[in-house]
Image (cartoon, rainbow over all chains, first blue to last red; front, side):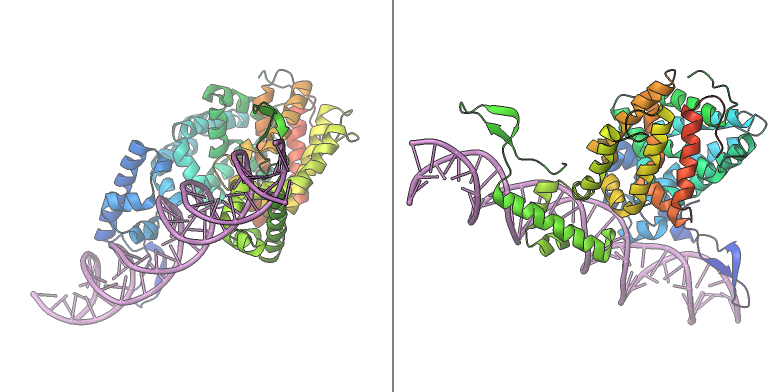
Length: 214
Length: 214
DNA sequence: GGGCCGAGCGGACTACAGTCCGTCTTATGA
DNA sequence: TCATAAGACGGACTGTAGTCCGCTCGGCCC
């Protein structure tokens, strides 16, 4: 959903109709799939950071320009590859069972989200790094970040209405940056430690006055 | 402080003596100053992100290789330029008056640090972005980050010994990432809002059970 | 089926970070 | 003062991200 969708369709009068993207042309679709498949394979074989976009274009049998037109930049390609996994999590949050989905108290929903996100992040750090760092501020412009942010902000508002929910949500998401996660793994922190650390922080920020055990 | 200092000096027996860096050679010093001065000027004139290292080398009248040998990479140059400002803050923390310096309760010291750091960050966002993002994980390897981290970790340990101080310190520093700060400014958040938001979070994480006002 | 036109294609091109290595400068000590 | 070698110099070179634009092909309408 972050690949660039086609241009708007055009009404019979020749006016552009917003919200009705013209369907993807057959050659475009073919190439999109070839690129994604080649990227997936090369990333797995050689490691994300050892694969250039030229190499992907070559392996996919398309021109470099094609890759860029479709995905915008390196981050866009990474986002497209992560998209499926992230959508699973998004679905669970929006319509799944509690505590990830609606129904549980705010602290528990935030905690469940942090656990699940860190898990996802841990399994795809390299791809996340690409998607977040390829260009300045990329992380905060991606659709999925905006969704996570909105989700957390609503829960902050619910649990602690006296806080600045919008900003606090950014604060809670900040430690989930791929770059930090990667650096900490390198220093020997493991996933479980980070999960329990984040749980403790979330409990302190959103929980009732008496703090939970770390 | 983060420019590469010279090689170790050599004892009379020809053995390298650790911890006694041979003094900087005169030509090296000359060039270092020329580069820093040129960088400072060009950054101010054109904006950090519009200046290439080639341009700096040219303006300084030195070869490109010289810039890289001395500063390592783009991040290293940014760090060198920030160094003086950061050292001021470091000094205030280590030996200045409370609440920034020793003597005040942990929450207050953390709060004072966050205020001061955000202030510094706000005044030099572009340079900070360069120093943190030029290479993967650069932020976490810089000496000053390690110092901030140690400082916060000690205070966390003091205020809330049941928390994982080491990890929690990283969590507290994460929202100070230059990239995020920049993105939020773009979205209209101002410095005061971020400062008060961080104060509230710090109070919640480190403070006594009853929360302070946001 | 044929023709039109605009989306899609691809690879040459630019700009920049970072490396390499033959040459030159400086500090030293005799 | 001069010989020497450690180390600094600088610019040509490499590899990659991202742009551009003339050409091609697919969808649509007749």
